Amino acid sequence: MMVRLAMIVAVIAAWSSPAWAQLSNNSRLLTPFRSVVEPVRDSTVRIRINNQDVALGAIVSADGYILTKASELMRGKGEITVRFSDGTEYPAQVVGTHRETDLAMLRVHVRDLKPLQFGDSRRVKPGAWVAAVDIRSEPVAVGIVSAATRQPTKSDAQIDNFNRGHLGILMTSDDPTDETGQVIGAKIMQVVRDSAAAKAGLKEGDIIIAVNGKRTPGRQALRDALENSRPGDKVTITYLRNGKEATVEATLKSPSEIDRSEIQNRLGGELSGRRTGFPMILQTDMFLRPSDCGGPVVDLDGNVLGLCIARAGRVETHVLPGEIITPLIPLLKSGKFLPQDASKDASGTPMAPQPRKGIETKGPRQ
Image (cartoon, rainbow, N blue to C red; front, side):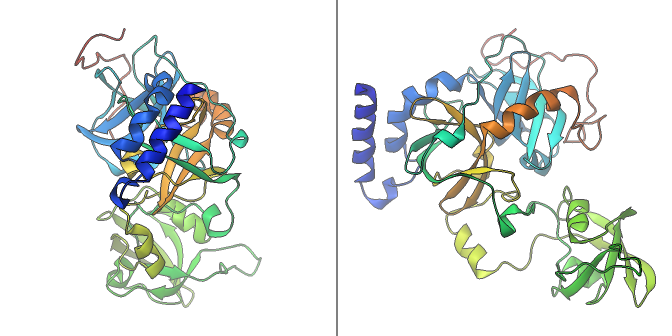
C-alpha cells in the first residue's frame, strides 16, 4: 500500500509540471513505475530487423516462443533478431501469423526463458493506471485506461493496413454482382489524381476482379490482396470495363490523400500502420511510437492485461486483451496459422532447419 501511495504522489507531482512533462513517456512519470514493470521485464523483448528496432514482444513459452505485432515485421526486409533484457540477441524465425489480431509468433533457439501469464483485461476500469513494459528498467510509456475492453464497431472494426502500398482509388459501397448474385469484384467510384491507379490507366466504373492473378470478389478481398504490399511494389491488376476484361501493371504508392481528421490525428507523431479491425481492444491514452508496440501492458498490481497492439490516435493506444491472446498461443505454436510462405520468415529469409547460435552481447542464456 505504501508503495502505491508513493507512486501516486510522484505521478501527481509529474503531472502538475509544465505541459512538456505531461507526456506518458516522460522520465519523471516513468520512474515511479519501475517496481510495477520489473516482474515482467525479463519476459519482454525488443524485435529488430537489420539492427533497427521495429517492435517489442512478449515471451509466451520457456522454449523460445515470442509474440509481437505482425504488421510492423512486414515493413522491414532482412534478418529478424530478438534482444533480451540482459542485452543478448538471437536470430528469430516467424512460425505463425494471425491476421485478425495482427499477432506474429517468433521462435528463437533459446531455452529456460521466463514466459508471462496474461490476466483478464475486463477487470480494469476506465481511469486505472497502466504501463507499457520495455526491456529497460523503466516502462516505455504510462497512462490511464480511457475506455473499457470492448468490441470495435463501424470503421474501427474493418481491417485496414496503412503500411501497405496503395492504388489510390475509392470504391463503391455496394460490390457489383453477376446475374446469379455472386460478387465479381470491387468497383471504382473515384481514381485519385496522380495515384498508382491513375498512372496505370484505371478509370471510374472499372471493376477490379484480380490482383496478381488472385481473384478479388469485393472490396475486402481487394484490401486483403494488397495487405502485405509496400509502396513501390508492382502489381498486375485485372479489371472489367464495359464488360471486357483487361490487365494493367500498377506501381503502388504511399497514400497521397489524407483527410483533415487524419492530419489532426497524426500531429502527435506517427501512428501504427495497422490500427483497426481487432476483435477486442482495451483503450488507453498512452503515447507510444509504432516501434514500441507489441509488448506487454500491466496494471499497478503487475497484472498483464494484454499486448500493446497499435497507436491509433494522438492520445489513443489500443491493447489487445489477454483473454483474446491466450487461446491463440498453442494454435500459433502448432503451425495452424503459418506465414504466407511457410518456407521463409516475414523478411524473406529461408527458415533454418537447425538451431542457430545466438549473438551473445553479455552472457549466454542457454
